[in-house]
Length: 381
Image (cartoon, rainbow, N blue to C red):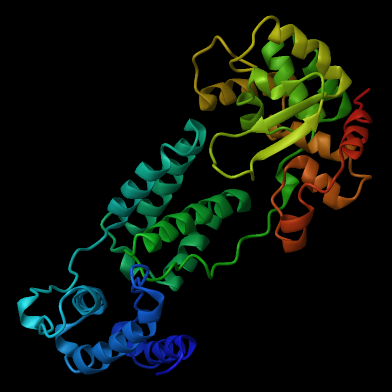
């Protein structure tokens, strides 16, 4: 008998050579977790035999979906039924070729229902907007199986004619996440978004505040608003990070602020920043005797999206420049630490890393004293 390794190689070789041509797939993933180790080689040889003697000889009766179903039922018979029973006949299995069309609207509905419990309200609203771009371009009734890479390229071109590169990239990323989800549900064979190159993001349209503008904005009498501004100007927090901070995220003993966005189960949106001296009084004032709850706008039941609009309108009324928004604080913050190593700047800003080394090994490799040094030297005077 062949070794287990050899059987696996033989089975995969068969799949690549023949199944791709007939069934447009690279392999049938048949679970053998319930089979004893000593029987696995025998089961794989048996599956090979079924593919060759049953499926390939009846191509008109099989597609990749009912072929997979047939293999699983045959394996069940082989392993669990008594020896000597006949294999199930194809005609008796009432197999039907897959005829259900997964429309883009149905796919989006399934994906968003899955994401709703995982992401924040602001992120979910953004997903709805990106979904509208997809259905507007392709149509709600578009069969997702019929979408090709060339269609995605045209979609990206259409987006680029109307939106900034950053928004285009985020919208394409949503599409990729949608198709990846469909793949995980075995409703789609290929993610056509994976071959798309993302647009270069140029921040020229995101103007930074001048020192005098930052000082003017930080003198706001509204404590919540002033603290929001300071959290970005002195810590580099995004508006979503600042608005989602909780009282318990502030640690005066460790002199730290821990940002934990609730729109992910991973740690990619979790980072900790030292508290700049200019923040201490306002933080203590706004926290008071509270032990929990939101750090800012604690008593106002208002969505992040509507509050963000109010904040940016307040900024525009003082600086009179529509290109300058809350995000301009991050640009000002970055300009104050640009004399440090780029890796350290990216980590402090909470940027994603395309560089595998930085992403995998150096993400947290900036010591606390370095972070404190970088934060404390920031001044807008």
